[in-house]
Image (cartoon, rainbow, N blue to C red; front, side, top):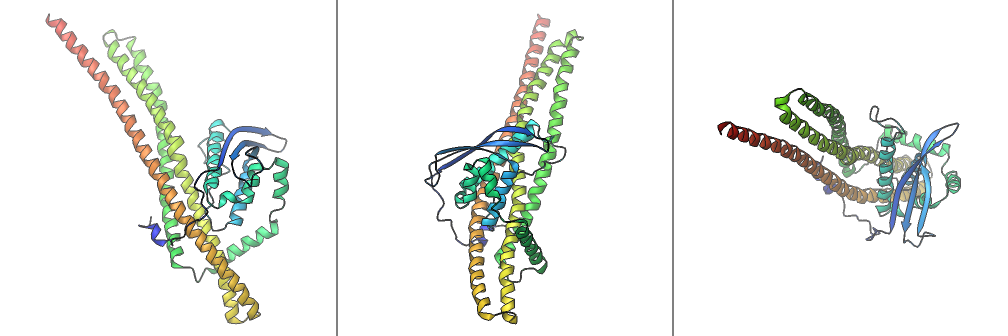
Length: 378
């Protein structure tokens, strides 16, 4: 990571950032749907708000994953240089859990819940009209609204422009955005390594827990055939059982608290790269008009007017990205710091509980030995 990301940021703030939350969203009650064509899950979206632009204070709708994808796409179209929260992948990492089992559905539900609430907490995205429609429209209304979006040819044209600008490059990119791009690349590499290692550790600890569950009962069975070792063998079995329980709790916390946060920021790194590409696309459009004016390839007055509009567009895009980058950086640092501190705390508690369990066993055995020695002496 760069030493000081804030050094790249102008003091641009979102002036309309709400001071008090007035929009509360819950994603729950997943429901399976099986048709002749497909199988999919819908989730209940419950919304409570005090905003005057809403027709009611409470709404309840059901949405499927494709609806979330539509919302994200619309937000990116409307706010190309704002950092849109990432969605969980359509398909999960191979080997983690089967698609549509309870663990997968619950993991996705939590991610979708976070996605909507991050939008709700964003000072600009929260007032997006498509976001409001997503939260309030009935299924048929949402379907009708989707059809009003940009068509396939329009989206293909945008893709072609993006590819062309990436090949051509951006000649006049400000240095601060080049530095920001380097930061994003570095951040993405590091967080991806953390993600892979965390996933591997979680798998290994799950395997350890499963072995531990089989380990304790062996001592109990052994005690049935060793009269002189009954108490110590049962004591060991009891210690292993207690350690097994705290290990299960540790693994559960790892899978629910650490891994989702790390993986979310892997997805965020991809989102940031996309934002920078869209900023460059706007810059490239301006550069092309300036080149055309210099080479006099079109009417100069028309080009000058287009250039002025594009200069304003680039400035707005740059300012939006700077302000949102500063906001995202603070949130990222807060999230990761809290996550790492919780991980450290849970690790300490796990080892302390295991240590106390085994020390208690040793103390009881020492007491028994002293008692037996006294009896032999008498």
